[in-house]
Image 1 (tube, rainbow over the protein chains, first blue to last red):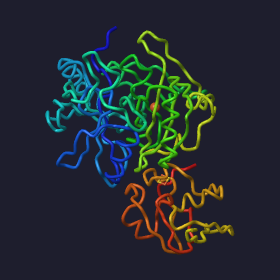
Image 2 (image 1 turned 135 degrees about the vertical axis):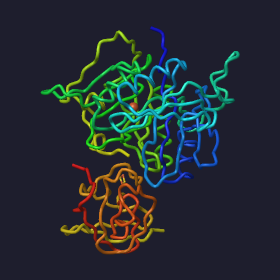
Image 3 (image 1 turned 180 degrees about the horizontal axis):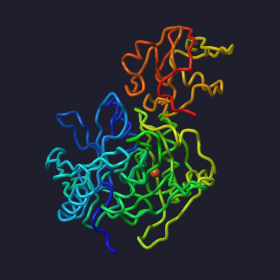
Length: 308
Length: 102
Ligand code: FES
Ligand SMILES: [Fe+2]
């Protein structure tokens, strides 16, 4: 099945306590390109291997966390279909006019059962600084900092993860690649959703409070890039959570760390290729340590409790 | 040149810990391996290090208002990771509110 419908995570809007510090972190440390600052104060950035205009939006606010995560959709017809199905399931769908973010076409927006806002859109202008397409070199710009290639996925925490799972599977055509279930009851504690060939595009963990952000993840090239990212974290005294290590789930290699507002970031590499005919991979909660941190084989205290 | 250090104690404990004025209370206390004030993001965003200052002067950096409201701030609630001591201090971790750490 070729990829159509929801293509990929397109952008994420993150609330930061101090814009100047946030820019240093996301631009100079993670290595994103500044795209621009708009009159309302929002700052737009992109990773060097992304074709589209922007993927990370920073909004200064007194409370850290996530404003919304948006997915790019392959056609207007799909967008209309999602809108109709969402309304049919009783969701309130808000239309956001083209141009609310520079270079972005019309969006539709809804609140998922876990209290997270998701936007869907078809059009975004291409960046002048995107990957080359004519006899392309590996990069047009010299990668900086942690050399993030792209915005990859988010892990979000909220109550009704079964409800959000249902929306993403039944309406938006995602598949679940892996779950963590309670050993006794089979209740899903964590789930990993993909709209593509990636092991996950969105992950959810059951949590007492809705609308929380666990992390925003950036793809880097390989395990060596994680070492280099870790060097940068120590050199610039960035608050590191855990890693370099590996996830059992997705098999991705990872470091978790925090931005200057306490939002968790991840640099991530690897992970298997997913196909929609793959059987569901299931982890029992009693093995959750290995599922999340494959080498440590146990969660750190922060994994379940520290969110923004 | 060594920076000035202040003596910090947690109410109900005899242990005196030293924290420099150029470091956060959380990093100062971390040197003693204490577990009473948990370390989360260390950046004022997640709220797990919330404490209340009972005695002493301090300055704060930017903190998420979700975890320390303006009113709480007036009542000396603060986040240890964004609190910089300006005198000896007595703090308490037994606070009501949104500490979710367990
Ligand atoms: S450790 Fe997160 S607010 Fe202090
Ligand atoms: Fe991740």
